[in-house]
Image (cartoon, rainbow, N blue to C red; front, side, top):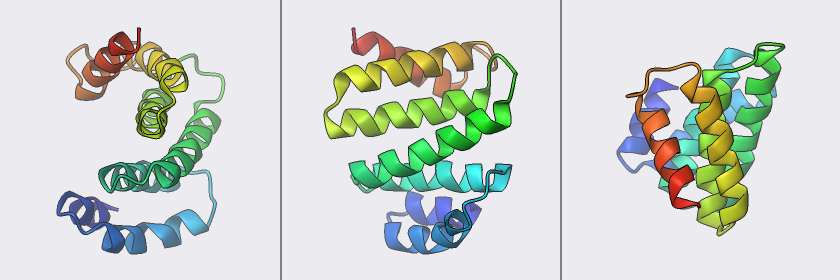
Length: 130
């Protein structure tokens, strides 16, 4: 997963996909698959692939909420919601993106420090959506 993140950061999106797809193809609901789905979403967002980004972001969100169980807030659910929002924004769905950003803010604000980059981004994007 780390190598895929590095590939994506270097603009090697196809290579990143090749590293992540076998993990995602197993369709498991564990932390490793969650990390792969988050990395795949970042890759697709960076590549400008809105549909693929939304698909993997929704996979990450589904896994996150499953892992969250009865816990009220989850940083993974917050991160996944942030990525769902970014994918929806890329698709032009501002209302859907706003809802996802609001969910991200609630989860992240209750699980990470106020200065966490994902929380800062989620707050900014939620505010811009008003």
